[in-house]
Image: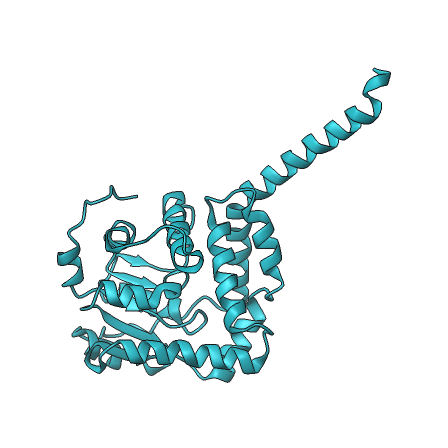
Length: 264
């Protein structure tokens, strides 16, 4: 974590920050790897925050402020959380697309896209159904300062926009998100992109030379995504599961003592 107030927001807001605000499973990791190849080393992607408990506490604060109306999360908070990065991408950043665009008005925005049919097939094959929100909400009571709270807030947003997880509601949510980005960002600062287009449009947008002899990165396929998510889920949710098991052990011990204590 960066100490509060250690960044000059005006300087950050006037810098050429890069926001990759496409939905998950639109080639966001491949895009981030491409940006690293182009020299952008400070990339905050969906897995960057893995294991950084201070980051999760800040994301929890942001989620509570936006989705539950508890407290506030202002520009200084964004600077403290993301001010050391050149690029932000994917979850949980895309939950705050509007806020990031407004906080950093000079940022160049890349909206990664793919056909809805292709995205729908990909996202439904690797992500849990909305019913998983009940488990994340339950676990959030046992360890609030972890990824659990962020997952809970993310599920609340997803289930609001896609209540039935039907193809119709998912298409509406997908198109609404992309329309939001297009409506907030001036055309000269917005690139709609998929890695299948190759280096040329990305490099032209960023003012970078096309890497010679370097293929456009591809990665994070379905099996890899599921494996990484399972590992992340177990590591970050384990404190909540552990606390629940400890509580249940104490409850059982008290019940057993109440039943058999008089015989001891």
